[in-house]
Length: 428
Image 1 (cartoon, one colour):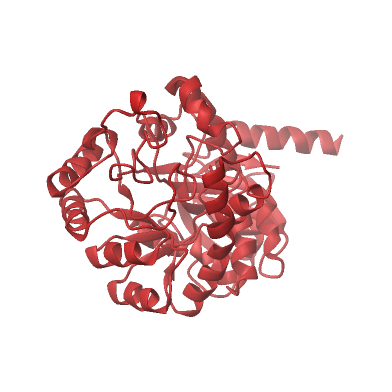
Image 2 (cartoon, helix red, strand yellow; image 1 turned 120 degrees about the horizontal axis):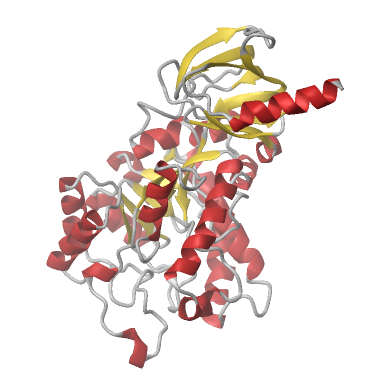
C-alpha cells in the first residue's frame, strides 16, 4: 500500500508544473557548474521558474511541502549541446529521403528527436543547420508549450558557397540543381554574403552557421578544402555582428579554419586538422572549439559497413571520423576554450551524453567535461546570465543522474530527473 501511495504522489508531482509553488529538491551531491568541487547533501529550492536558494542538508517536509528526494543521485545544471541537427538522423536512406519526404514529414519526426534530447538531460541546444525553417518553427513551438523539447538557439539554413558543404543541391543532377542563392543559403562574393546573413535574420534565426570547409557527409570529393574567401568571411562576420549574431563555422581543414578564425567567428565546429599553430590562433582570437567526437566516432563506425554511405562519403568518413578525438586531446592540452557539442543527427538523438565518455577518454577530467556542457557552453552561447550554473536567481534547469559521474563518467547516460524552467519533465 505504501508503494501505491508513493507512486500516486509521484504522478501528482509530475502532472503539475512547479510554477507558483516552492519545490525542495534534495540531492546526495550537487555539481553546481561554478565550483570545481561537488557539494554533499544539498537542497535546491525552486520557486516558479527560478532557483530561489541552495541549502546545505536536506530541507522540506514531505508531508507539507513538495519534495523531490534524489538521495542516490548527483544534481547539476541542465546540460547543453552546442551542435545538433534535430531535423535529421543519419541512416542509409538519408540521401534519398530529401526527394521522397515533405517538410511536414521532417517536422513531425523532429518532435520525437526533441523530446529524446530533453529527456536525455539536455535542456538547451544550438541547432546548427536545417531547411524549410524547421528549427525556428520547432523553437517557437517549444517556447509556446505545444511540443516537449529543449530550449533552441536556431541557425536556420547554413550558409555555403556554390557546390560547398551546405549547398542543398550538391550531388543532384543538372536538371534538378538549379542555381540556389542567398535565400537558400548559397552565397558567392561579399554582397551575397551579407544578403545570406540578412535572410537568416528575416527567417528568425538566432545565430549564423557557415561551412568554412568541405564536409564528410556532403556529396563532394573534398572534406577539408577551404570554401570561402577571406573577403566573403569578413563580410559574413561583419554583417552578423550588425544583427547581433554569433557565427559558428563548420571546419575540418586547416586553411579554412585559419581564415574563419581571423575573420572573427565565435566557434569552430569539428576542427579535425587543427594543429598547434591553429590552437595558438584560436587562443589569440578567443575562439571556442566545439569538438563533436560523437559524430566522428559514428561515421567512422558506419564507414565499415559497405552499403551505409555513398562511396565518396564512405571514403571521407573513414579518413576524417577517427581523427576528431585526437584533435580534441590536442585542443584540451593546448588550452583552447571548449564547449560541448555532439553533432547529434549524425549520431543518434538521445545519445548526446556519450560525448562525455569520449572527452574523458581523451584526457579531460570528469568535472571539466561536465562544466563544458554547462557553464562553458552557456558562456559561449551568451546565456550564462540565466543558465549554466546552479545559483539563486537563475532559471531552474536541473538534471540528476544515478550515482557519482565524477567517479564514473558513464553515469551521465543514467539521467533520472530533468527540470526545465521549473517544470519537471522527467522523474523516474
